Image 1 (cartoon, rainbow, N blue to C red):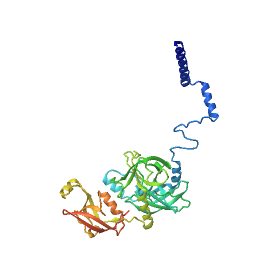
Image 2 (cartoon, rainbow, N blue to C red):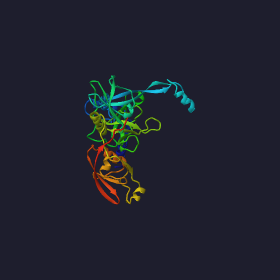
Image 3 (cartoon, rainbow, N blue to C red):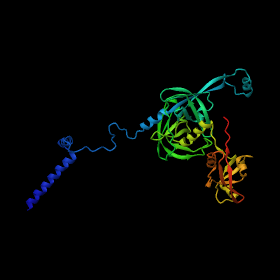
Image 4 (cartoon, helix red, strand yellow):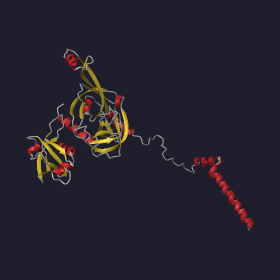
Length: 386
């Protein structure tokens, strides 16, 4: 019996040793058997995780770029400026003497670069107002190499947008994304002409929505993105991964002049509304009450007898303006507009501007310890002179 157990133990030991060799060392003959079994159709090769298949490009946005890039144009502007022929002295008396000399100034040309987006097959191009502001000549260069002079249809400095028109055919127009809003975290691509190097695509995400109070425009509701936006990108397109226009690249936050990962774009919906009004009227019609608002603070709330610093104070009022005609007074605290809290001053002004001239605006106003409801008719916001 003991001999049988010894034989059994030796057999088990030999089997374990063979298994160790097969698993660990994997002899060449076993590898050849694997190849034979695969070629014989007995076993299929397992896919490798992360390995791209032939002809595929995982993570590529080439199709979105192919849809949008032909609609993004380069904008070249020329401005004629008068510059002194000589280096002016620092002494004010001598400077005045030279300035009175005839012909001390000469005309020079200053050029700048920007971007734009073709938004209609009839030749309308949307860009930033600051890209073409003061330009004597504007030339639009298309993705296919064609160039054409552009005329200004209209501008809106309050939103920093401008509409141009080129007389070209076969234009590729980009569709606005207005039926849905981008979400924080969505991948976006910025297309433009940074530093004049040529059309460039950069990628990032939507970092934030509804950015305001930046002091860039009168009316601010920016999309913030970390897609690299540099000088020259202004007026270019911010698109989603389906090639739809999400916004118009407008500004960056930078201490160096280059991208630091904080860029701002005007949402496509707001840009489309501005464009449509400029095309229809030559300017943007906005609601207006003729008021000078001021944000509420904790100190002011205490002085007015309010428990919380909510609402916007009417610090100034235009005589015979829409607000004054509707019963508003200096010192009133506007707490609600059409039944909803007004928030801060920028939000109040944006909601008033969104009204059509002639629309009724229901205001909830705190005055002398009581809340009153006023019905005010919106007027037309005066167009800011250029």
